[in-house]
Every structure is written in C-alpha cells, then in structure tokens.
Amino acid sequence: MSGTWINLFLDILIIFFLLSGTFFVLSGSIGVVRFKNVYLRLHAATKSSTLGVAGLMLGAFLFMINEHGIVSGKLLLGIIFVLITAPVSAHMIGRAAYKSGVPLSPEAVRDDYSKTFKD
Amino acid sequence: MPFQIVLNIIIAIMWMFLSETYTFTAFVVGYILGIFLLFIMRRFINRPFYITKVWKVLLLLLLFIRELIVSSIDIIKFVYKKDLDNRPGIFALPLEVKSDWEITILANLISLTPGTLSLAVSDDHETLYIHAMDIPDIESSITDIKESFEKAIMEVTR
Image (cartoon, rainbow over all chains, first blue to last red; front, side, top):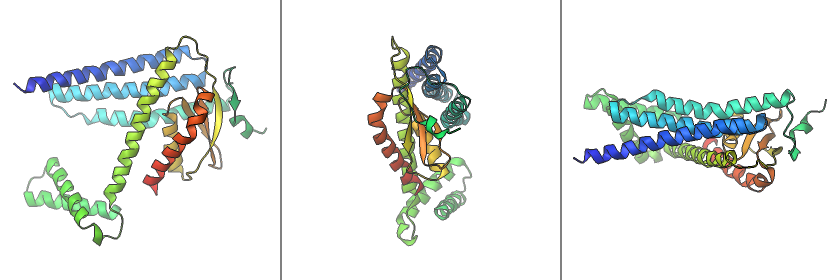
C-alpha cells in the first residue's frame, strides 16, 4: 500500500494550503478594519487577500484532483485572474481616492504626487 | 518567434496524425518533441530560440509569486502590530521602461512588493507615484527592487 502515504501527504498539503489561505484572508480583513485611511487599507486588501485566495483555490484544486479525479481548470484560471486584477483595481481605487481629495494620514512624511497638480 | 511557435504546433499535430491518437496527451508529447526538434535545428532559423524567452517569462512569474508571498507576510506583521507607528507617504520613482505593457507589469509588480502600492502614472509616462507604508524603511531598498524588476521585464519584452 504505497498509495496511502502519497494520499496522506496530499491531504496534509491540502490542509496546509486551505489553512494558510484562510489565515491570510482573515489577516487581510483585520488589516482593512484596523488601518486608518484608504491608502493603508488598500495595502492590506490587495496583498494578503490575493495570496489568501490563491492559496484557497490551490487547495481546492488539489482536493478535486485527489478526491474526485477532476482537473479543474477553472480554479487555476481564477488564481491567474485574481493575480492580474487585484493590483490593477488597487491602483485604480488609490488613484481615484487621491484625485477626489482624500487626504493622506496625518503622520505622512512626504507627498510627491501633489506637485503634479498645479491648479 | 510566431513562426517558431506555428512550426512547433504543426510538428505536434503531425505527431498526432503519425501516432494516430487524437488526444490532448498526444498533442503535448508532440509539442515536446517539436521543442526538441527546433532545438536541434536552431542554427537554421536565424532568430533566437523562443524557449529562452518562455523561460524568462517563467522566471518573471516566479519573481512575482515570491514577492507576493514576502509582502503578504510583511503586511501581516503590520496588521498584528500593537501600535501602528508607521510613516506613510507618496514618492516619485523615475521610470526606465517606456511602453504601456512594460509600465503595467512594473506597476503590478511594485504593488505586490512589501510595503508599496503604485498609485498613479504621470501623463508623460516618465514617473510612477508610489504610496509606501513606511517611507524611511522603503526608501533605501526601493531602487534595487525597481532595477531588478525593470531588468527582468526588459529581458522579456526586448
């Protein structure tokens, strides 16, 4: 029975991926609540939740292969799309926030972008 | 490069017909054989072998994933810190890459590096404005990061 060891290893790998994914998503949400303004919240919302969702999807992908023998391409595509779109949406939200006049947090030390607005 | 890919696909389809198995696996086997054949014949095609470029794309992807993991761990340290005493700010970064594609990839990569978030590109495509979580912490390392990213991107696109 050599297959059981591989199954056990795969199960542990799946558990690892799912747990770390949930942990990253949870921490990202706590960060969104804790940080002070839009820009800092975007930091928390993009990075850790991207990795968290990627981890969850990878875990689900491995589970589908291991348990049901289905190679689910949708999950892999989901990872790629999240990876591509999360930074882009963060960029757009940040730019929109800046252009509509959301101030930086009070302890901000420098703002080079304000020099480009001369009106 | 497109010519080589077409050639490779033709070899793969020919392999499917020769082995008379019309499955995806046969196509993949044929494609790998095609890569091998093109590698042998690479001197007769006066263009660089396209797999080297694919390899560089893969390296860029690995860099992307590594930076993502490092920055996520970094941000989590911030989340569970007792007092948030960071000094945020926006700083300008002069761009070396010029085309829209390259700037997009660079902005995405920088968004996923520890403590930085690309905020805007100037209208003349000369500078990238980056919001940093902790300016004194970032300032020293950002130029190295940017140079390594730009080098990796330029190797793919040029």
